[in-house]
Image (cartoon, rainbow, N blue to C red; front, side, top):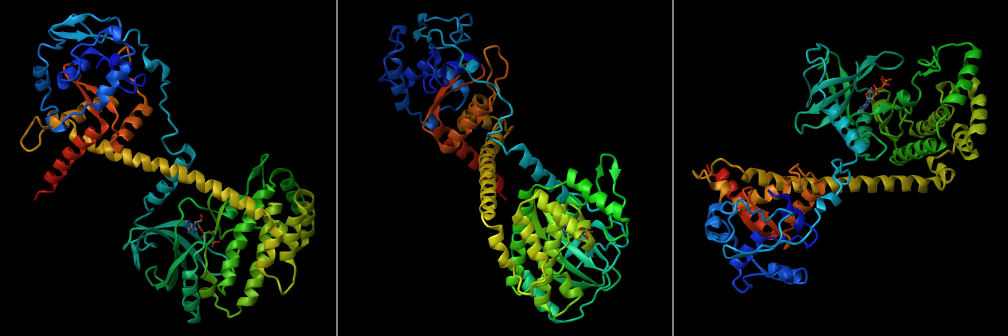
Length: 561
Ligand SMILES: Nc1ncnc2c1ncn2[C@@H]1O[C@H](COP(=O)(O)OP(=O)(O)OP(=O)(O)O)[C@@H](O)[C@H]1O
């Protein structure tokens, strides 16, 4: 296709080209129109032409049975093959008067607008931002990862309604019951879940079942939802399995903030086990090292405090207690989003009817966790090191943070999580603002993808129609009638070239055309066959009708028995 056709018509005159083949076609189809338009009428007559063109409608049914039809109809008018030396689309061409009964004219000196359009292939405006995209892709990849060791004799192929068990971490032995964590697929709905198996654990008190029911009803954005609990011998013992929502790619707070790290070539030999005996000098030096290298920003600590207290607040309000607040049980599911995992496990494994005391302990352990975060060391919670840690916090963070920790660590019997709200104060607003901004950003990304999905549907329809080798025993089906219009439109949208014949790739053009097609715009465009023998002016609305009719034909045929 000659690019000058596209270039002259694109935006300068509202998408209407002004070259001879077009006008020939128009005059041919519109008897009321003057047969010739002289170049001296330009540009004042351009508006008239536009007006006439916009009033012009094409009977879609009769539009084009085949390109040859139009060549025949236009015989004696424009026939580049007959006038091979005459290239009316060439930029050098000037009005030539009447040729073979048709007046040719050409808009003088039209700069190719393509040069004004920067070619940009990245177009972040049309697609999801690369960060969020990568994050979603990573999570999907983790969620779809092959389950490991399918022939592991210790992992059954199926447990209750779950299969494809994938061990997330090797079972760890130590004080308390041995547990192991799996990702598994539910047979009934195909969703992934996190299964926490407590080895060799039977139900000791039936009251636990009522507590489990309460946990199952507890839905909160900072708690990993408990779906069900079942007892099974599938692992070769009497195990209790807790089924939770699965969050691919999540990390524990322990590994995120307290994992042993190489600091200037030094790796702390005791960091993996904070309870192991160590020399006093080691503790002191560790604290000092953290003070200089690893302190978390105060805003992040408050962010965690708000999320943790939000979770504890609903747990306590439901008459429950968490009982296992520990950095290894706090999941970071994305960036700084916190979710408490393992809910309900202590209530089954070690049932005790003392909710009030356990709620107080939840607040105490919360104080220890915040202290550890603020000192960036699990050692900080040791009674002997606590004063040093608090001094460090006083010198690094605000008084409010120190007071919050002191309140949580105090022995007051009347402590309540709601007392923490005034201490957090206006930081709630900061957090709320951050969440709302993030929500806006995600909504924006979603709307882009929504648009892309809509355009993808259009492209699928166009591609299903174009170049179909045969339909209803008709090998010419995709080359005739409505389908031919869609083919020309496909060329117009995707196969443009610049004045040097190089591919002109502008996603903005493609998106704009497809959007107008989807909306059924009444804007007109000029379509031309590759051999330049066929030129058509159609509205997007007509093209949309052609596309829908053709695609419906395909659908009907495909649905036949
Ligand atoms: N609901 C969940 N969704 C996705 N991953 C999870 C979920 N719960 C735990 N995990 C992941 O499984 C891994 C093991 O979790 P687990 O709670 O066993 O940690 P742990 O530190 O080994 O604790 P424990 O001391 O009880 O063994 C962790 O990497 C954690 O991120």
